Length: 169
Image: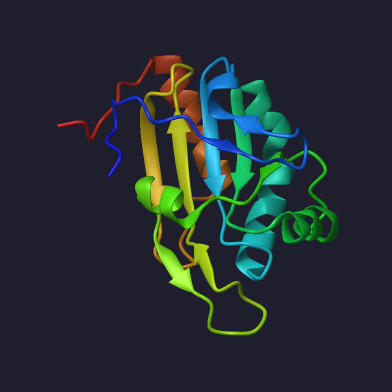
């Protein structure tokens, strides 16, 4: 389990935007925000990532670099981008299940023909520019994710007050 206040391991995944997305190459003013989504099969992810698309300018304005990541293969990630209208959300794919587990994400087995055999459940990780884990939100089901507008209000306080990391003990 990753612990707040510790440096997370590098993460390198193929991306729809670049040949490979490297966590160590991120240079946000304040945070990198990893938004792990279940995959193209998930209608709740569709709405959630659409909300992220809407709020992308506000995250960027606050010095936060969001990226959406999943275990999906490239074709499914591309379908999500195209059909969900996500031109501004960076999308990485092919997250290995063992890597998802090492990040503390839950895994589920597909129960329908539309779902992949194995996929990650949702999670959000806020990382300082030096890859120190600031906060994490991990779910074992598709529902009950933090709302992006709530996160933006919280980020305003966190950035303004230089709010310290909690949960590190």
